[in-house]
Image 1: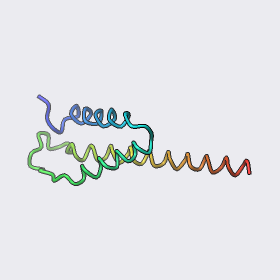
Image 2: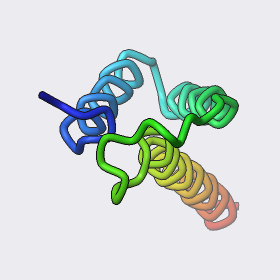
Image 3: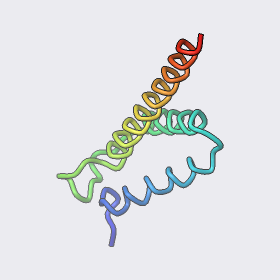
Length: 93
């Protein structure tokens, strides 16, 4: 029996997020999707009394950490791409 804060359940949920994000046409849309999911998840009310494994983080905490890392990665990647375009324009001008 899987607990709701078991690693397998968290990995399954992350897999679902990845599958849905890969259906989107580009990185901007993926970033927007992850930002929306982060917002929706952040606004859920916790019921901390119901942990099956109290020594582990909740599913909500795990997903928020994962989403934060993905959002940060995509934002930095966009910044780097923007710099590369800016640098190539300056070199050719």
